[in-house]
Length: 255
Image 1 (cartoon, rainbow, N blue to C red):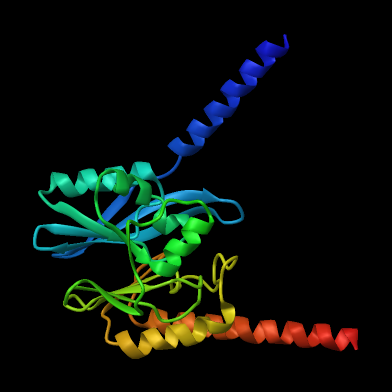
Image 2: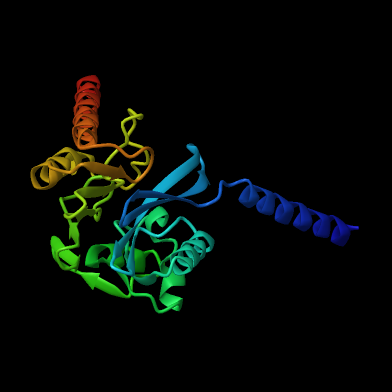
């Protein structure tokens, strides 16, 4: 009897997992211009519900570069199939920080011998967490993945201590990743690994370097323009102010 109940429980758990996976929206791919596509994948996250995650496919001739992998190996495989079906060749990927919404496809790309890139700090964090690492790493605050085409910039800590942004100079598109928040939210999102004290300054560094951006792509939510940078800076500055007030109130009550 116990064996039968155990088997039934296993079936139920398996069925629920499949249903939850099947309920996720399909990988979305949207053209931004002649050489840049937005890919969006989805996961259900405790405390946040269904969350979207943005990344890019950047074309340099017939070569395709992925900025942040989709949120699963399955969607990463779908993205590769999409790239190949259009006659492009996947030449590499870069992950803008260590969280799974940026790195979940690294292992799959490594198995396919597609070059994967991340900062030395991102790889260090992935290694410490026993997660698959990018095959290639860079240790510069300003690194060209493709000369004069795809620029990777580390502005300082914010959403995470290793977050970088990606600048496409010819298209004047800035991929802000999770450092940049969408206009429709007043929340900083997941701050479990955030460096709140640096976030506003880091966004200001991005403003100073890429303030001419015509399109800004946040890690989550709707794409926008350069106003997303100021929106994010205000949110982070407010968070720092609230944190200081909380600390002051706590100290006052202790006194």
